Image (cartoon, rainbow, N blue to C red; front, side, top):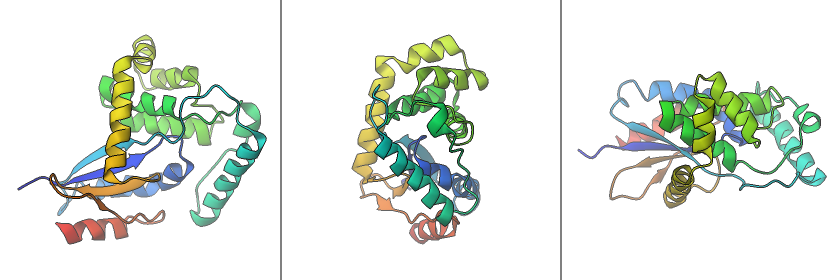
Length: 210
């Protein structure tokens, strides 16, 4: 029997992905239990915003702060530290953080751990994961070799892996983050419902296709 795969397409600096994290955690636990334990789960980085050294405009910064406030109104309990907007020089650049996820995964299988570290740094600690220095520090905090991590972050192989994740997500049909898909080789990917307050609808949809 062909193995079914659940794809989770995300960006570590996507505020809606941060809001979804508690439900994602519950979902991943449930997918290890019957009747879902035969499913494979793959995480893809989506690349919300390309590399940029340009400071974010005041209008965009205000727009993103509005999104944070909206998330807090529809996903109760989601925390944001608005000091980020005054303590750092925000840039619209998430690809470095996406590369960091791929490097941590390739070095030590810590892709999900550094994703959480990036989210915590960004949303709670007012640190800027658009900066390579922050990403390298986070890798060190996870016990990774900082020098090797820095080299891998800027390597051609990491860039190729990044573009491969982007292409796979686009082929699946991801148009926003987070997105979830159920995939079987040779068939079209099935978009899965995503509820920011419960994993039940996603699990029910997967169950219907088993």
